[in-house]
Image 1 (cartoon, rainbow, N blue to C red):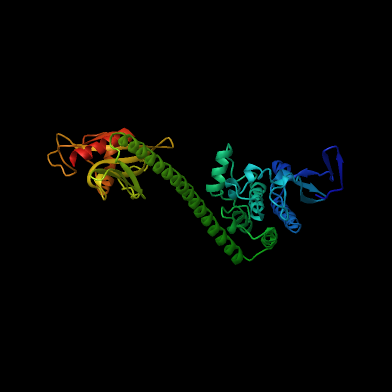
Image 2 (spheres, rainbow, N blue to C red):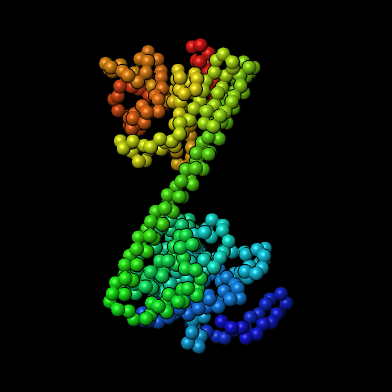
Length: 397
């Protein structure tokens, strides 16, 4: 929309523009655009973005409500938060990243707006214009964030031409690099989509659309795995920091009785004690869960407490489990059941632990309360429990 005049009243800036007929949002709600008019509306919006790119300016808040009909054309308006690409990033225009239902995945993690984020918003707008609904309709900000970052867009109606549907899926790609190069490329793609094709060419477009849909699902699956991996990485970092804090507190308590006690750490292995007697706390690298272990197993990390490295003369297992999103360390010790005629897991006459291979095989039984050849004693891993294990190591030595 072109400005007719600009003025000021005090601190207020006044922009004079032509009076529009209606917004694209109102036209979509009224459902009075035929298929050809919908595609042409998208083409004109893309052409508006291409004109902005020549200035160069990012829109940053593209949505149907900000596209106005005037003089038979759909034109961009309401530049509340645009960005001049030639200006530094501390200008007033950086106050908001956009309107939530139209924000690209990278904006949700604080990355700056780019040409590709405007193209993603164009993809959401296109989906809404073509179907009457947005692709992602989360009830709150958290749901919208997850959907934009991890969910594949729904399939478009079979009434939408294959070439147009293919373009919309590309615009909604999670990876900015997978979106079209710029708005001009979108205009060119829509021009090509409107042209009549032979049945063979249409079949080729259908095949390309199916391939793009598969890529969208694969990209969404990858995004889910990446999000889970990032969360697990944070949880593991927190768990190891908590374990180190417990061992430091145990070392402080032990030094009050034995001043020679020291704590050393090498990666996932800690040594606590003096020259003659010590305990080694070792966290195992994560092992793949066995098929018999339930998928909802809360286990995050596991390891062993022993008299020396490589689990020599072991005393107990340690596990870190998730409980309502929080990490918690526990101490596990096992003893033979009275009815176990044969027992191969450790000394029958005292508490013991499992090695990593045996632990993995026995993990399923730890999650269910049932009669078994061993009993499990489980308690919180505290500084006092660690000091008691050090006392046991000194006694055995």
